Image (cartoon, rainbow, N blue to C red; front, side, top):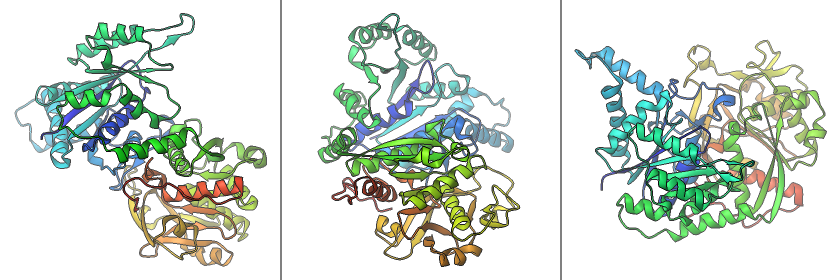
Length: 551
């Protein structure tokens, strides 16, 4: 059966949650065991988002194949429990780079190269190649940006042309505001957005209405009237307490059965085991038996999307432990100016996530020292592992001036230093140690081994600087544990403290955590936080769904 297509568009404004809507639509089809995969288009002219500032764009997500992609791909993987590839990410930068290369090679000799048909043909060709090589039953295409933007206009036109040849369902994510002064939900913005979409030659088959409160029948019927849709195709996409409720919320409105019928998919029974597992985890998320407080100490705290994978990984591990996670977001610069005791008092666990640059570094180091000395469970991710090594070198090994060459090129003790092969690299995009790397864990009594329960693992990476092996012996002699290295033993991947739960990894395990398959290291960290708070070890952890998480 040929691939069917669902195209997700956004109207009125960005930030409405198209990525979550796309993930939820994919999940409800996945509950029926349809093979469904995503494609995301981003209109920016960057080749990928690897060089973007997290303050502007949110987290940079990384695949096993080293691709640096939009944060929405993290949501796709978390919902679908599938590893994706860079082929599924289409950017304006990739498209224009490719078409200029083709023009320079002479592929368009005698022709003036135009947006239509040359660029739109290329987009359709890319989409069809993904359909043919990955063979999904349904390909869900999220179009970044807003209808009416210059940046995505040519891509929307390509989707219109695709619908002339293939079975395509269009879904518009819109906003229905409720003005307090009026007391009713206003549909006029959606009506105007619908007209703009019609001017692009697209008539949406479904409208998802983002609203702070449940969509009122009067508003639903009015939108249906002005968009020539049946009212049941105007879907409430109101704000819920957790995003993992959204697939079930859509299913209550029969979106699953309507899509299956309209796409003319093969009739399948819902996978009850998969659905029940999702519901059980959702119930533990919404009504946990216990609660713990975790501080995330970082430098991009003002935009929580910068650490979205860390946040969601805590949710996943919390659901497995039947424990709610209250996150306290701590701006690291505050810990440089104030008292760590004041900011971190009453915390059950501390995480220092990844990042780049010197700003706020000393505040993170202060938080790590506080965790080590107060025996508070600590987990360092990438930069958090490097700073864990620096803190240990300074305060335990008494190496005054210990630092990273990233922050201080003239440091007396470069405990963290740039990789030798990185020194000759001039280009910034796609040149770090990226993607999946194998790691060998050492010793069966370490935090790392107890978390993963096997000797060889694989996690995703995104960094340029490494633990300096010249200091390994001195630091291990003072009690630091090197519990994991690359398989050739050349690069340090995991370090630990001896007398409390403290672990740092050069990897980003948060990038592989899924709602139904939590990251092992996060499970261990949350378990330690529960022990810190309640004084007992957690038992009977629900960690996986129908398939075991092996890496």
